[in-house]
Image (cartoon, rainbow, N blue to C red):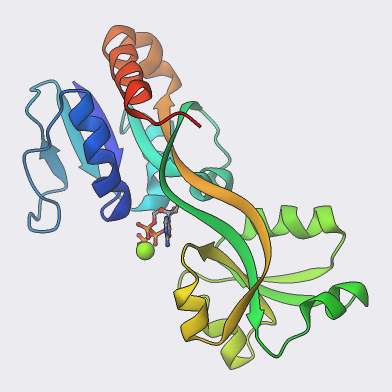
Length: 213
Ligand code: ATP
Ligand code: MG
């Protein structure tokens, strides 16, 4: 049995065409089904639904043989025990710094002020500001980062941006792009040895279905 870990929403939706190219069809819709284990047309392949941030953990410890996770999630996890053979180029967005439109970020950086930054992505934020030599107080949040600068909880946030419409709706501006984000295929290293043939076939099919740069 091959177990693939996916998160509901954009990653599930954008992985479906890649699965299809590999001859795999998921037999239930996660939006209407309550099942957490979804069968496929292949009796030897199943999909498990987990939180986006839990995908690397499932694959690391063998709860799933492989999975699809964002670069953001993989950096925060650290990547231990994971083989990352493929950038699938799905769920694309960027990691950015945003502030209220009346906060002068450039001046704060130039003056060497201590900046309060709220984020779910503390590892990416820590690395980014350390590289820039900017002193920050990081405040860990689990959601709705946009609210932090509006309530005075923080001066800035580090968050994912795709169209920018959420920022705009909350009078926030993107002041710095940290990195491009897309989702990758991650594979359990032990499973890669034990189930070599089946996993190789899947990885190759995914690779063929992934658009070139
Ligand atoms: P949860 O909804 O369980 O709290 P989440 O919000 O991180 O977790 P998703 O919103 O499904 O989960 O995001 C999954 C992945 O998709 C993220 O880790 C990121 O790589 C990518 N992603 C997030 N937001 C966007 C976006 N606006 N546009 C494109 N890709 C995104
Ligand atoms: Mg979400």
